[in-house]
Image (cartoon, rainbow, N blue to C red; front, side, top):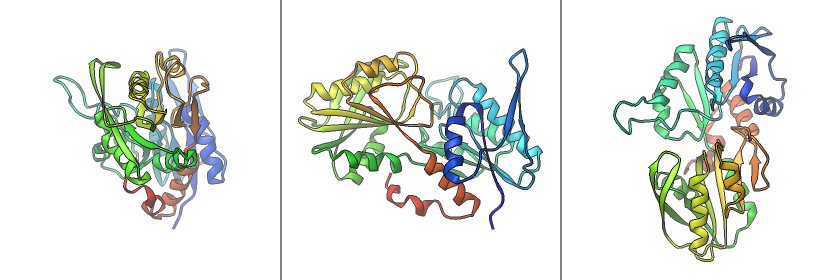
Length: 314
């Protein structure tokens, strides 16, 4: 049995929520956000949601107001007697803080999970978490979607003659290896050493890319330092072309300038985070159809895994 569905959006992800609602086949729900002079804000649903399955679309990239708005909307939906509240979080912010990598630091990803649960969320739908174990930080169901279902068809359409998948760092080895296995091609790895956050000191290539068409794959690009350094390393080692796949284009600081000046032929990203500016090298593939279908299946209590069987190796 399915229940009435209402799809709403936080301020940061309205551009994507509108496309999701259109793919789903209904209008985006009506809500407003009242703002006070001191910066405080208050979301308000402007239609009844009593007994409904409420899906709230909001990525939690900076600033942290985006997270706070999502928490307030979840609380408002619970207090308005909705059947269940599902947070659709295309980009799960603070995911890079998934463990204590040095003394006296927080595990931010776990804290965010606690906050969402405390607010009253019944389910979370997200994409390409920075670390798979974040699913275990929740005591509610987490549907973890993969951008591979969007990227793989695009890579195939390029018909690259000498395809090689590559990871820009050792942490992404499993991800690149899964793509390589599925696409039946070789894989190479970049080993990097950092002197501090967002600054790469040294990068070494493990594998052969001479005369190859390299496709780097990563979940997040922040300042662009690692991915552009990796692209240069590929060209220096004889690669014919270099492209990159990235699910979440944070692209802060000098990222756009670095990408424009880089050896990358193309950077393919999704729309989980909106671009701050256009770039001739950046191509955006939409996640709207994927999220809309997942929302339908959740509402109808249908299997999600069967819909993404070709990505189960990822």
